Length: 380
Image (tube, rainbow, N blue to C red; front, top):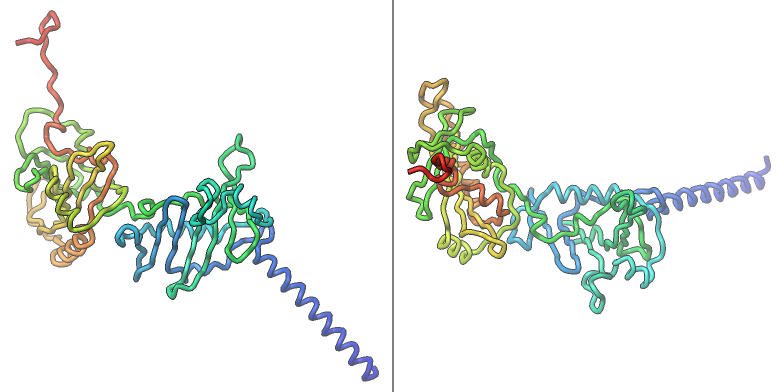
């Protein structure tokens, strides 16, 4: 083969290789930029996300990572629901593109995708904005959420949502629904402040607002045993469903919102209605202070504190013996740590949960049937 011919072949091969490389790169770029059926945000660096801001036309929430936890800044740094944050990131990474089209001004308004802070635009034409950044404040994601799409309203719920990325002029229809994440600060709170098993409760005591007057006390002799009323004595039966509600009121507690400030705590203590103490078999004691009676216009509020008292004796099989399985100093330290976590807060809870914390024994007693004479009138 002549040298000239060989050189021409090398040049041709180089051109062909370059063309193939360009084609592959082009396809890869289109895939990452949102071709139909591809993951729109597959490359989202989930492990680098350190802050999330979600703005709607009427509310905003700022979530921030601190050490090994997340907080809600608008709620005084109260812990955020990490599972919900994980769901948001996972949903974004799993979202696939259904279609894309140019974002004209008319389309943005029709699909409610104008920025939530844009002046001169009605809320109906605005969307929600999600911004994510890393620990140094460098943007990781900036997107606007628009309306959901329902292919056939007669056959089911929405099956997609319109979104727009800040660095792209197109609108994407994705196969995920992000609307549940467009909520205010209270919806991002960790809703379970305590983690206890109702079966671990040894004694329940209801106290007056002075925390000294005992209104009633229930106790059970051992784990798996039934509660018995030990104070006051009564010949009336206790309503089992109500007693079960009382026993489970703390372990099933779900909050709606939180408040905190020195003034709030002071006024709360002044208006306190009662306190219930839940003593556990391991020595922990949860103090649940109830705020004043709530209604449609007055929120139901409680405060939680934790104490520790070494358990003395336990009963097994009807025999009383010294408790040799006492957690001791470690349990006391853990109780103190939990108390420091809980005591700064005033919790808002649903009314039905508030009412499960019965404050008077009369609310738990079965009413005696009224004796009547033969003619149906009350007997003397």
